[in-house]
Length: 214
Image (cartoon, rainbow, N blue to C red; front, side, top):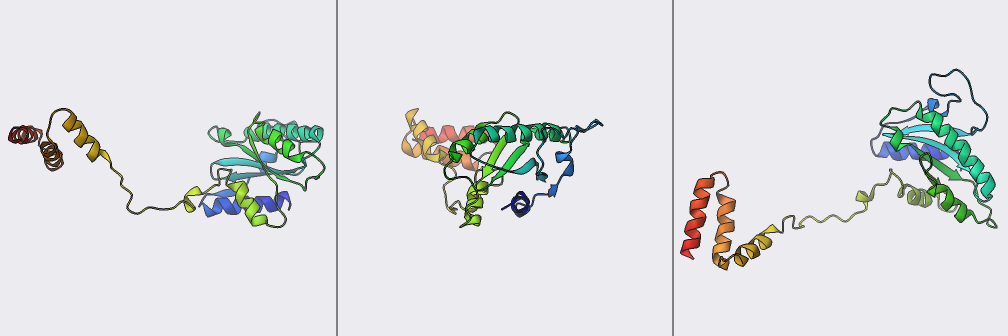
């Protein structure tokens, strides 16, 4: 699984949400917007810029394991993101993400700790890492996107067609009884308020009559 293949999945997920999605070469530029000097030092070599809906994203691969190498890779990606932000609209910057695909980790290394450290570091922007399961890529990708802005929890939520949306009737009834109305009078008040809602003068008169009758 490569960064390019990861990008294809991310773009497909955005398209499934009816979002506009595109590759943005400017996000991987080697110089800040409006500047002529090119900075090759300390920048990642294989990084791809995307725009997924309102979210600008840098996509790259990363090795989990050696913490020294990991921090060096993150510094490089941070530098690229700072450059990329100069090409973003002001309202986009807060939505910027770095999404990384982990190369097959060394089982002898503490790669889970490395992953946790990388994702918790939000110095420049939020970072999320997908560790593909070669035995079930689709499921592991679904678990990854469930942690991202591409999540669609409403698709798996149970729908209830007859859920009670308004439970105020009982509360109002108890409140009126608490303030001295009989149960029958309180019920009549609620009924009158529902029927006479455009004529406050007649409503007051009807409520008074209903209370006197009780």
